[in-house]
Image (cartoon, rainbow, N blue to C red; front, side, top):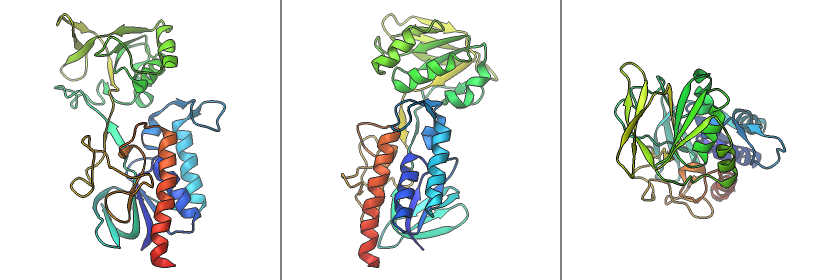
Length: 305
């Protein structure tokens, strides 16, 4: 029996685990894959406070995990397949066991959106990618394309120029949505070619990606780009499978919380990218995690003091 169980090992989850363990609560964090979540797919971050030089996403994730462990949080690598949030005692079922707690903190994060094209899933890992940091090295001196116009797409395009011969940046609008500083970096990079007001309509190839068909939204004319890799960075969808129909969600499927990170169910809190919020960044996830742990501590203490 735990005081607090946290689902998800991203910056929200590990910050919650740190604060919870430091409060002397028996704390378990369950992560199904690897430390860091989306943060671990980021090459370098320049906007996380306290680092005057860029810090790697994997490096920061491991520091967060070690810090949580230092204060006594237990870390379990397993997949949660069901949650029971009714009553004072909550429970989670993983692929190997069942665990109970007084308070539950949901930090499952979000996953990349897909284009919904034929062959997109078939060629995942065979030319189609959603993580430039993971896969960029496979495209040394090759031609690749990035789809998207936000900050993630800009980061991916810039990172890929370290490896690729050419990077096409495809965006459905005429103007990019990423911050001005990123736009300046993009426009001055000779390796990047912009394909604006356009969208990918077909993935080409038989056994792997060999190119894409791109349609201009103004003229409806389609053209072919011979590329070796397609990196998709068009946003996120919440990983809400465990709580659909159990908690109040936004129209986009994110968990709705109040300022104390309380959800619609007593004793259940949420933090990070899984939540409805205006900004999804590592620092806002960490902030959410701290608040959620503080609220969970107050909730648990009403039964134990």
